Image (tube, rainbow, N blue to C red; front, side, top):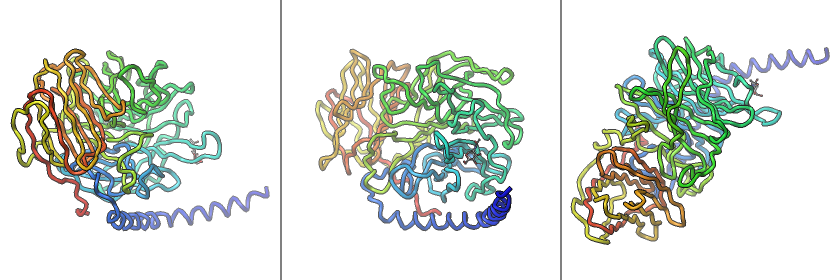
Length: 491
Ligand SMILES: *[C@@H]1O[C@H](CO)[C@@H](O)[C@H](O)[C@H]1NC(C)=O
């Protein structure tokens, strides 16, 4: 019994620490806010995007808590403020009235014992509830475990963690990989999908149900790899679209197959049927990538006023990022609307993007190999003849990089080529419009083909200030400039 006095002492000490931790957490948030304000002055802005959400300083990865609460859209993200590489995870926060103009808000979650990994947010009456993964160090292999935590806010700005955490302590099979809860409301209940894996390393998604967000019941394994779809399914989402159900997730460990799965990790979806009485998802399609560019991961959706919106991390794991040396890393894609057409998802820029058009700088037919200077942030609408081969070169002035966009009517492939064989390409069969809509920002490209049946999101070694482009066939271009949108001073 020699351990008993120690145990009592420890308990006493622990209680004292806990009562102080509320204050020290507030202090830590204040210190962090001051750090960010100060550090922003040191950021090299040469590659900063003008109309995408980015971390004010430091590292960003997955979008989290994409939600609508008290009249605003909220977009949180995996955040490490202290370096431009990944580190102990916080939740950064931005908000928008219209999905286009964003402003920074104070860091929503800071890690304590637990790192605050990905999750989602719901409006539960007047309360905004975050459900996120607590990633904890442990003393035995694999030296971490994962459980689901809650945090609450009455104003969508200040969050406090729930006293009763965890609300979902462990995966049913004991796998340490149990993360990225995405919650939604259906009928009188909350539902959530959580990413996980089987004990023999196959990705899967678990479906849970709750009356109050506090206690959860496992309903089913909603989807699982048969062996060729990766060792872990991260960031699952599940929603109804056009009368079908979509299981969206980000598998890690899928082997490249021809043109497909060339990024470090994938984000894609399976379309099928689902019934809330059986909790069974019956796939009707194979897994399909959601975006065909170099930089698109961990997509998360919400529905608002009957429209399903998606946003993704506009970067990739285990690749160099142009901005790494500049005190920040990572961005979010522009927000897109989703529609279902013939067993695939169409992705279009949100209608509100048109608000960013300021003036047309060019509206003409270009002759062969003509070059034009482009504004740093611009939208190009390209009406080409798809019977003809087409190539557009975006080239940095001052020795910036080169990126080619190509259409080949013979193979019906459209591609984004960053040079040195770093190509992403896919077959495109227009189902309606044959227009290309290209969004350029300082160091990024988002190309929407036709009705959104093919989309590429790629960070590009930037045209530092301006770009030049060439066309091999007469094509019609419409350019409009966009304005700077990311506000820092609104706190
Ligand atoms: C996870 O790890 C933490 C820290 O070691 C521990 O307190 C907690 O009980 C663990 N959870 C499970 C479900 O093992």
